[in-house]
Image 1 (cartoon, rainbow, N blue to C red):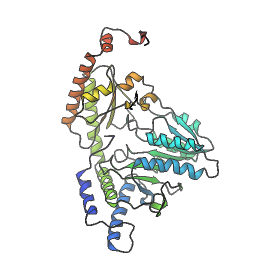
Image 2 (cartoon, one colour; image 1 turned 180 degrees about the vertical axis):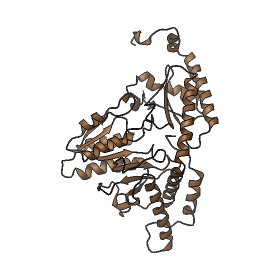
Image 3 (cartoon, helix red, strand yellow; image 1 turned 90 degrees about the horizontal axis):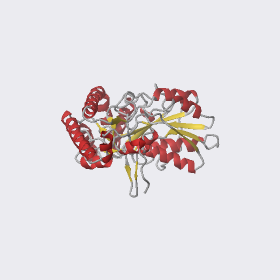
Image 4 (cartoon, helix red, strand yellow; image 1 turned 45 degrees about the vertical axis):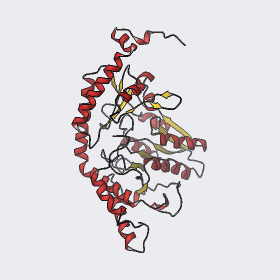
Length: 397
């Protein structure tokens, strides 16, 4: 489940006391109300750290992964370019929009940004990364699991390359944290962005891992009371933090069970659809991926039309709808997908609370409506007659 997840009832149970009787400000050091809330916040900090093999002191609470990404990219760039010698950032063309937009802001400030292309399977070329690094490179930012196609990048190899070149490595792990094993030390990760509502925690809370040894320094975006090691001022929202901590504990304890179950349901969904429908393309590498994110393109079907027909299911299209135009997904375009196929993509999310019955329902409904929409398509009729659409010269209007 990529857009969000339902709050686990056990997470809500952990949060509720801190919304009523345990309401103290965790930064109040002169009375019991503050002490007991601070203790709960620090316990949650340790739960987050334990999930990625970090030190609790390296965890900074934020409002979510978007803020963490902004803090990492802008913070590193601005701090280490004070001398004017570290003005280069490397990222990929398939990053989350908040990473790409942060990089564009830095470009307007005079930074040079390299946007690495990806291969047709969605993975980066490690040789291209090595060639892109130069003496003035301050940061490499590459997401762990892509939010649209579920591709899992070779994080350990990227970390080795960055560490050997003395370049900081940031990864947006919003779609991976709590779902697959992560180790910031094994992977040489210097900064990691984390989101609470992607792992059955509450919305409005996230975290940023910032390495202490070797020390990583950031220019803070938000200043004030100096909370969170001076990197993120503002009162820490104790109920949300406690919820994030509980979600991390559950994720750690149940990760293997959840992973095996999600993989089984994912395989059933893909097989159930592809056994009954032809001309279906799975976007992204079939081996290096998180199985809970399945992105399929249905040739000769408009993704938006299929979504409208499946309004009772929480799906999303690879197409980004704007008020003036309908543009295909920039992620699928980066993979080299043709616009027609990019427009026909649908993203399916499978999570902890997805049932076998829901998967079977999705297979049945998708199959039914793809067949129906293709029956109305003149292009599908031509394909059935054996006509190669690429050989047709379409009249211009």
